[in-house]
Length: 486
Image 1 (cartoon, rainbow, N blue to C red):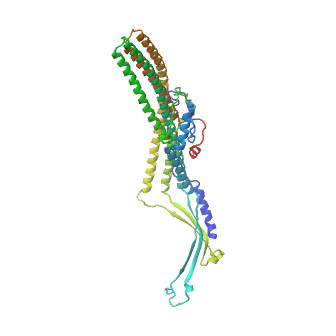
Image 2: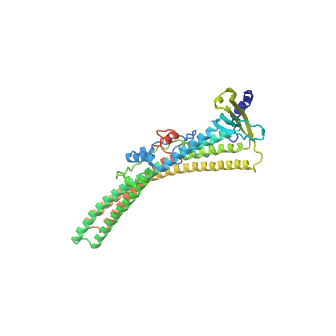
Image 3: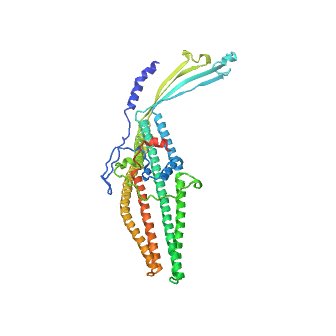
């Protein structure tokens, strides 16, 4: 055992050195030109990274129980979301594998055998003993230990990269979840908008039928022509056709929702309901740190961390790999003597491998790792630009749509008043039926366009929430959110 003690200082020195050295660059966030304030909103500030903040149930701001249930159901049933949750589990397992290389590998084995040597073996050709002297056994029970001394930090860089990729996978899950949530909300609001459009059309059909009956009575009294009645019938038929087209669009939206929620279309029903036309106010100033709140930006940065660490892994190949091995156990030719002190065996050794020539392979691997890092820097910066563009676009749309909604409301009121005036003047015989039809058509168009603006406001509100990174209440870690996606 003296040899073991003699080598202990060297082993301890190597382990200490391994704890202090890591080749390759340490990660530093790339500089980015971040504006001090949104062009269409108040100021915001940059804070420390917080990419593990989970997105809350932001859709609850719309105060719609049906939407709440759709969102909850999608977390349990959507297959795309389940696939990305499985990818997170894979990435975590890969991080665990990488972490395991920081520790010694210990194994235990057992060997049992019996063999017989030839009686005519050349070392003793003249000796003719009994057969039992040519038969012997072997029993071996060793414990083997192997450990790579991480002098240059190769294993630590591998672990650093694996952990960063696991975090990136968790952030990617959040991106997919947020995209799914926004698609469900947008599709649901379009379905409710279609319900409201059908209600408006039904009301107009009732008005047009009354107007058509009035024309028919006037025709019977000789006060209106066949042309007047044909025009009234045509306008009524066109509006009824619009109802059928709205039914088709609603069915398409129902099927789209069924897919997003992960339900079979045959068993999926969304009853007709009221259209909540007033979108909630989104506190733009509260998120305050867009770089923290956007999961796609967090994912891009974590992949930067991983590729930066992989440069160190590639550079470590320039240096020698050192491995310590040892074994201790028992070996005997007789099973009854296997655990005797005289049967003890042990070994201790070290190996070093230094690459001398490999055709420049190591240099190319370092170049590839650096190029991969540069690629991910560009991806990270591109996502930053896209994030700010999406926020500004949503804020600008909401501001413009607010002004448009006010004008559209006035137009709707004016059109409704014009319909009443035209009908009154037609009864009095002062105008032709075409003026009533034109007034009704204009009123219907104003109603539908006003509804379209309200729908666009809801869609832009959802886009703003998505651009800001989702909800900001009930925060929890990404790991917890992915571990329990239901």
